[in-house]
Amino acid sequence: MDYDILIVGSGPAGQHAAWQAARMGKKAAIIERKPGLGGAGLQTGTIPSKALREAAYLASRTGTHGMREAASKARHGILAEAVRRKDVVISQQESVILKRLLKSGVALIPGEASFVDAHTLEVMDLHGGSSRRLTAQVIVLATGSRPRRPSDIPFDKQTVLDSTSILNLKRLPKSLLVVGGGVIACEFVSIFAALGVEVSIVDSHEQLLAYLSEDVVGVLADSFDNMGVELHMKEKVVAIRKEEGRILTLLESGKKLYSETVLYALGREPNSQNLNTAKAGLALDQGWIAVNEHFQSSIPHIYAVGDLIGWPALASTAMEQGRTAVLHAFGKKGQSMPENLPMAIYAIPEISWVGKTEKQARKENINYVVGRGYYKESARGQIIGDANGLVKLIVDSQSHKLIGAHIVGEHASELIHTGQLLMHFGGTVHDLVANVFNYPTLAECYKLAALDCLAHLHQQPH
Ligand SMILES: Cc1cc2nc3c(=O)[nH]c(=O)nc-3n(C[C@H](O)[C@H](O)[C@H](O)COP(=O)(O)OP(=O)(O)OC[C@H]3O[C@@H](n4cnc5c(N)ncnc54)[C@H](O)[C@@H]3O)c2cc1C
Ligand SMILES: NC(=O)c1ccc[n+]([C@@H]2O[C@H](COP(=O)([O-])OP(=O)(O)OC[C@H]3O[C@@H](n4cnc5c(N)ncnc54)[C@H](O)[C@@H]3O)[C@@H](O)[C@H]2O)c1
Image (cartoon, rainbow, N blue to C red):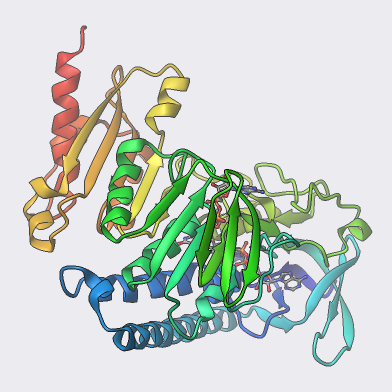
């Protein structure tokens, strides 16, 4: 065999699989078809969108009405600066990843991989046209996903956009209509509304981010309202057409919406079409690869990780899946993914959560109480001027253990890890009350929420 392990794809899943294999002393290589390393995680998804969000957020904090009142020249300048900063972050992060992989001894092989048989990959050089065959004891598929682009939507990278092409806009449009009320939609609505673009959303659900609770999403909806975002809820898009320099979005209800640009953000599709999985005896499930809890496919030495296996389809979980798969492949059998995965939506404001929602707790017949700690009650919340932030805890009434934490407000994505670790170690609401938090901090809201939980627990019949 040429390698102990061949990994297809250099996104977060592939990188962390390769790094783990190298740390175990294995001869490892990553095959990547794109010129840049890092996949959607670094090049077209997570990092560029977060870098743009940061720039837009900072810009929106200047003046009472943020960027909406700024002259259009200033706003275009801010987009140019935001895009420049995003590109700098990508190249810096790419060099960190490259150094880490090369220092660990991971080989980087350019080209597109496809199966010849269950242990052999053909690697096609997409520029030169030449190819070579490589064999390995273990193969990890980490080829990720791409935006879902139905054929009847006239995508053109300039006016009808997906989450990749919107990152490369050269000038700010006057208006943007976002189709979808999911994560990508809420993040880009935040970015463009903060930059002063007239933004509207169409979503088929009654509420944005329909799986989250109303009180948490309500804070986001208020922020969107303040930024002038127009919501078209419980509406379905039936057609998108280009019409004389503008885009017409036609809704099932008969409404016609016109905008300069449209972002279509209705989910993603797996990158499996060129892998030739049938040659390895591997069946696809609508393009996705089914795996067991160790990330093994139906062929035991072929693993699949990251977006290619579907939910939760996050860079954060992809990294750990890559690591866990490699540990299993080389004999460390006790590894599994943690039960409670933190989630974060980098909207303005951020939303982050871990564990159960109230809806899930009710479905599982768990008796629970809810406690809330508001940012405005903490000195730090006042100092940073976030009056709407909220830490919401869900606590099991019998065991007093934390079963869910939901945060909306500044730094929610960082703050959530306190709740996550408490849940991991089976901690109770009393652990939060009995601990000292730095002062002034937003983390104190955990203690405020925990005290609120205690008050509700005391009110419950024994
Ligand atoms: C706009 C946006 C924002 C996001 N924000 C976040 C966030 O804030 N936090 C978060 O955790 N997640 C976020 N995500 C999700 C995250 O980007 C993905 O979950 C993550 O990148 C998946 O990692 P992966 O390694 O599975 O695949 P990818 O990152 O997609 O990488 C796959 C790689 O495989 C390569 N490849 C594919 N086929 C082949 C082949 N046959 N041969 C060789 N190479 C191949 C591709 O070129 C690509 O480089 C976001 C996604 C998007 C689109
Ligand atoms: N902060 C983050 O972690 C982050 C940010 C952006 C993207 N992502 C990842 O990217 C993925 C894709 O994001 P997204 O916003 O496109 O997906 P999403 O699943 O969050 O939202 C998509 C929305 O479109 C609807 N939808 C999906 N497929 C549809 C279809 N065929 N027809 C009609 N409606 C449909 C869904 O009901 C949902 O409301 C996410 O699942 C997530 O894993 C993560």
